Amino acid sequence: MLTNTRITRVEGKSGESVKLSAGRDGSELVLEGTDLLVAAGRTPNTDGIGLDLAGVETTNRGYIKVNERLETTAPDVWAVGECAGSSHFTHISENDFHIVHDNILGGHRVTTGREVPFCLFTDPEFARIGLNETQANEGGVAYRLAKIPLSAVQRARTLSETRVFMKALIDTGSGFQRFRSRGRRNHGQGQMWLLAVGRSDRFKMRAAFSSGIFQLLLALAVAGDVLRRFL
Image (cartoon, rainbow, N blue to C red; front, side, top):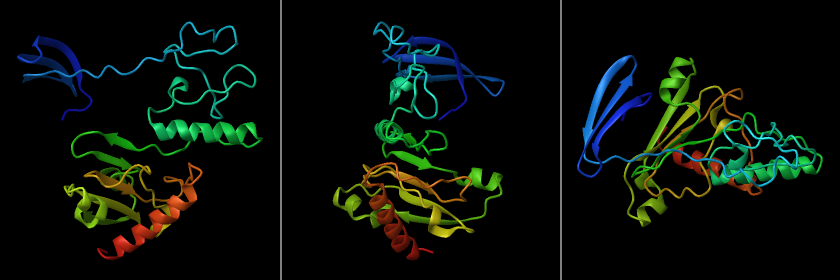
């Protein structure tokens, strides 16, 4: 897997033979294979719907302009989800809704500073939130490492998806106080997790959903029970 790589030329036919010319860190390289899958991203569907008539401005990429409170450039008009440039996750759009809901009722909630997980939908899936070990070491963050096989998760055993493992970094200064769990739809179906735990300036605990308090308590209870077996 190559990151920070820029494709400069594509030759051949997908399904038969493909050659990619690319540049990475100042060096030229060539990759050869049989198939090519292109992920071109998404384009906001905001053209021609009358936003300009309502006084709602968009960015040069077509996203609706919003501030940290998700207010648009038109008074009393709000935008949520992907059209407003939020990350392309269902739970982010839901969290946008709660922010707008509370702000309409007189609150002051913002999108800045919220933690967004990194997800790679391979098989098995890979996801993490917060710092990984390399970043923690580079930042001088002292931590304890806990790692357990996914076979310790009953749901994973029920589905016969016990590959890979779960992993957690625990800040030695704050213990379990900054435990962050992944989205509520994660039932341990073969995912590899990196759950990061850190200081308050790096990891901010947020109950993003209406049932967030319950989920947080459940996550803490499970983490404490599981990690005590391996620490």
